[in-house]
Length: 486
Image (cartoon, rainbow, N blue to C red; front, side):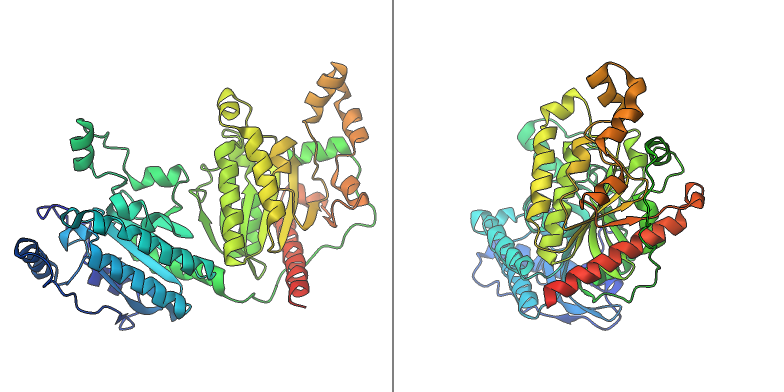
């Protein structure tokens, strides 16, 4: 990285300031040993010494351990004011050593990046050290230990293309410069400037490439919540289950009307009323965002990974291939961390478009279903409302399926199915009844293990129903986890 890189001190704080901001006061203990610069030629060694004087740091990274709200954690922090946070051989060795130490001590790991990438002065030997860092990280993750990343301003090059993008969860500073090539390098290589709005963290979050915009001052609270969900023991449940009804409802027209109503509860309502410590990821924390909400959540005491179809978002943004890939990412996260996986099915169907076909919607449905069936952690699927077509099937392959009483599952919307079979949509209800699409039909055929009854008041205030569904999920997770530990 060129020695004359401009540092914007207003948006790129020193590593010491970041450590103080994120960790409990006085809890940081450094793991770093002094850097020996005598092996370098005089010109480069003088650059390093000048950088050390400017930054009050001997390298572009600091490592150590401390606590966040009393929770032990290992920390890797870029020092951008040292040669733009660029990673040379010594910095890479320091990072890899810290990761291995965190693994041996079974500590969660938080990386705060602010870097121009690989250090150009050291060339290929520094460049290939990204492999060493990545290898250490994969061992840390394979041990089931959380790894979180916060992308600061700026984060580019080899850092973003390796350890900066490998977190279980990856947060980013709002409006940060985040990109593969820095703007200056891009202009040199491509002989034109990159549009200014491309390499902005907000855009990557909105696209689901990274997970959540988090300001530095909020990072400690978010990291503490996420790590708690990933590592803490279950909490005692507090919600009340509703008994399975002795006789299920069998009014198809009523069920269809209720599940399509704007008043109908959705996945966000269940999490709002029945879960605590929710950390959405994949850019799905905004209700205007992703049609499949992915999150860590403690549902009535049980921490799990959630992938839930959001009916509200699907009204203007249906489930396409990218959404299903995000659901698979949630499944992989659950498997790697050993957390239960909970899916919510509530969809009028997958995206029907030329783009969806070009991008392999059918293949993504199949891969999503196959990935869910391969999970070895406890899995629960919740048939919450509409369950239409392949989009519903993609998230249905759980150990346990529970359903709200008026939920339903069908290969096509009843009106479309009636038109296909009879050329007459007026036969939709008759056909739907014969197809046995209701939750109670699925219960009778042992495809659903529990039906959560719905009361008349749920059509106007669904908070009690949301709590009852959360309680049912928690009860089944408790049973599943208990069986696995016997």
